[in-house]
Length: 304
Image 1 (cartoon, rainbow, N blue to C red):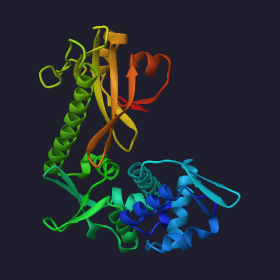
Image 2: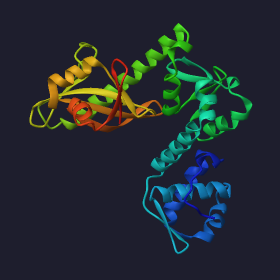
Image 3: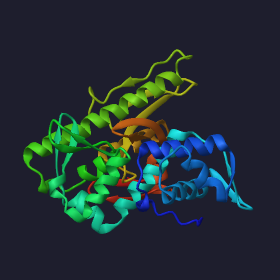
Image 4: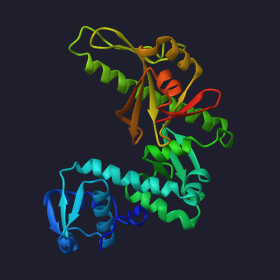
């Protein structure tokens, strides 16, 4: 019944079934391997193969352990496990070249009202099952207003927005650039609130300067607890796990050295959720000590 190989593409259930099974395991704590399916099927309608996939995923990420035919479950946050499972599923889908090409590179999409929509008719029939899988887990939803599939997942959205601009109309280009700007503003506001909370017991307050001094090379001026300055450049991090670093920003990092920081903000469903990395004195870390890989495109693409 149980192996360590996890093939997320075989998962055929939806968000609700995934959540209910995880809730069952979290509550059960311990259960014999041979009793898992019988106990779950008393209350949850889910294929046996999907139950095994969820178990394998939990074991792989050390949230569960199988010893002497007994599954033991550690304490875990159900919503976090759901997101982790979904992300593994979409990563597996997008890692297969022909599926990635059909859904991301060759599909028709548009941006309306700060939302991204895929025309399902632009995807070949033999790839529609993956669209259905993405709908079941909530990464896509049917939008009646436009009769299109609305993209609900930041990884899918980012992949679509990374497509070459030459394939888009001028109107699409402007809408995409506007959405990128909105996401950038959301990330900056998220960091600003983070800094405000950090300094709430100190006589200092961070300021967002990106809209008044676009050439500064950073977005926010904040402070350390000792009152010294902190110049913060904010980068939204999406599926590519990288950020664009302009020459102007690099020069600011050289000039400001240890007072210059890059805050990398993670997104889920087009919303900033957490600061996933803070890089202090990034010029030193990236170019001198080579702690991060990068490539030059005139400016720089830095991978975290």
